[in-house]
Length: 200
Image (cartoon, rainbow, N blue to C red; front, top):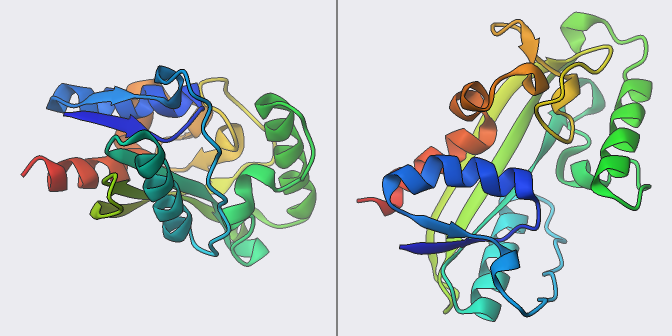
């Protein structure tokens, strides 16, 4: 079964393929099309709302069953921020790398002086699989619990991974191997729920 993953992020494509392809699914990205599609506006106030907008929008435009996710970081000391605005938290940067760096810098600034026990946070991932006719095939949500470190560490990841410390692993998400991250991550959790629903 072919599934389009609604992303231009190569890291996400690798993660999703690693989990779904062994189950018999073929996962393609937006780069599989010659056409450049207009990105659906993500103006919902929840992760699931945005995932649904993307899944339905790209499924309709491509006529391929589409899996979309919306994910982000929820920090308790910041009353849930950056939340749905995680990717554009700092609002600057022309490349993914520049945005990531600016976002991480701003996060550390906002948590300056906050004690370790109050730096609890979690990554949330909401996923939606939609048909070209707009029908919703499956939805899921996964979480990945941790705390925000005082300095970045690790290179195997993107976004807030270098700052996301997982106490029971004794390392940041960016210090984990890909397999370890897939087994624990919010995206891995949400994906396995989706896979179990559509494999039935």
